[in-house]
Image (cartoon, rainbow, N blue to C red; front, side, top):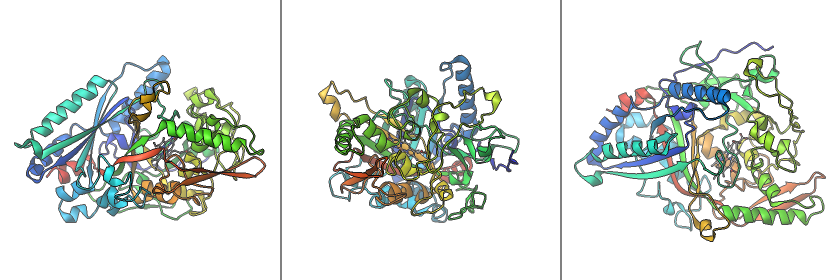
Length: 529
Ligand code: N7H
């Protein structure tokens, strides 16, 4: 049994709830707010008044834990509902609301905003088709100052909250044009809850956050399920969920020292009352072209099938190879040639795998009563013969495998993000031709303590690169590569390779914002004065 390590105390009553807990609601509204100079003083007063209305991490963590316990007991969703509110400020907003000596404390990638970062993260250049000038949010002259996140279990509740806040905001100034709002919607897919529009289960793999809520006797920020007798229990909250230092996501806490290959070697960035307990939030409205994805998977399957090393492969296999998981969420690593629905349903087993070593059944804490992991375990796949190197989930999280650019796999922990996205738009229905052109996709949201180390790195250094983290092509799901073609090289069990080219992108950015999610103190003492 390994000795437990001291856990940082995390001030969850100061940190906004979506960051560390995640709202996990079926209905989300994002209200983008742009404020004219004349309305700034009233807007600040309003921001300050939000401090008592915001759902902080302590409350949301408690709710989520109670909900999960009740669901396990009742075997169905318990009748527990809530409506949560969070707020975040853009780089433009911060520069308008704060004196320079304050906003200068914030990260430059955030302050410069997504437009300045568009080329680095692979967007088509300004002026070219689908370039940033087409964005609904964040295009030149259309950059908001702030964003509200409203999330609720019930549609009526989310709508009521939107009405309430829109009305208050409209009353901040005498002139109706002084505060303008743009509202975006997110909703769980009714036909396939928990799945995104390409049909894959999402939200399975998240980093764990080391630390305790509020005091050194408080509950863990991330629930721990491994028995202390399991050798991985000091490093993982659950199978496949490594414990990261809280400073990877929230400012003012220890994080792993950059470039260090010792996960215990930490650094705490200097913080101020403005930055402490805050986090950077990346928003992207990502439109998904489902028919284009399905036909690309079909084309890929045909090309693989023509090669005797692969033999007949279904379009479902090709799509799973691009993602790294099957639609149920079962990872290719543990279910090589077809989906395994019971494995996909087991949220712990479906994330229990490595790439460069085999997985094994974990030892869960017996009092949790979790079913043992009896599914076929993952084999060693260090050369990508099972899960392609370019599969989306292997690109953005190579797990235990050393990478060609960073070296030790410990360095991957510097680039983890907390994903909080939710689908938008109606389902694609192949029986209805007009359904193909409906706007649908993902309201992508992710939190990190540095956009440069988080989202920007993942896009620029890994997803858009044919070489990194391990080579053999681009991340075909999210990689952008401007408007240039992308490719993926698949390696068969006998090591022969087939390269498939993808002339079109199926995920396109139609809106973007880089935001800062301030602490309660920062909202009251900085943004609200
Ligand atoms: Fe991805 N998809 O449906 O293919 N993603 N993603 N993502 N994503 C994941 O493991 C998807 C996007 C990450 O730890 C799953 O939880 C789609 C962006 C990370 O093993 C699926 C879009 C970025 C992980 C998808 C999209 C990321 C991850 C498997 C856009 C960051 C965890 C579910 C429309 C730059 C990987 C799961 C791990 C998982 C899909 C966007 C990052 C199914 C369709 C922009 C870090």
